[in-house]
Amino acid sequence: MDDHVEAARTLGLTHGYNDLLIAAAADALTDHPGFNAHFEDGEHVLYSDVNVGVAVDTDGGLLTPVIRNVDGRGLADLNKARTALTERVLEGDFSMDDLAGGTFTISNLGMFGVDDFDPIINPPQVAILGVGRRRDDATMTLSLSFDHRVENGAAAARFLGTIAENLEDPNTLSGYLD
Image (cartoon, rainbow, N blue to C red; front, side, top):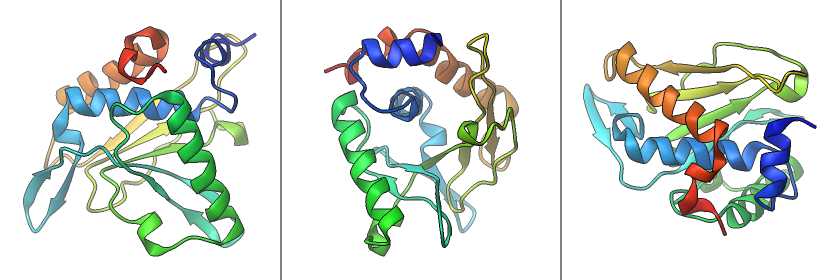
């Protein structure tokens, strides 16, 4: 069995790997606050709340509902919030508030068999995480698109490294364990 799926199941997740991705990114965003931000009118605005958008493929096109105040929420709570929000969006029963206020976005194309891709930043956010499929050897590709006007490549590498570390050892996400 895939190590990532096994880790998610060990942590009590009943749905997929996305909840672990959200927690791993949220934890990294608190360690690297420059990426939990907007760039508006030439100003880098940092946010204390971590509000993660998760791209969802709908019949009407791609939408990015936002899970609010992700940092410190347990994985079971994240799972419940993400599942309910995704279902509302897929059913067309959502408000514009459900799509607003994101400080960071995750786009997971793994379920489409995509190995890697370069996601496009959702302005005014400064970064987006692209997630490829989990391969048979339990590896996957993470890619980060970010606004170079705000953060440089070395800072982005450190941020992405923190996400990878969190995914390699989910026990580092102690603040998210229920």
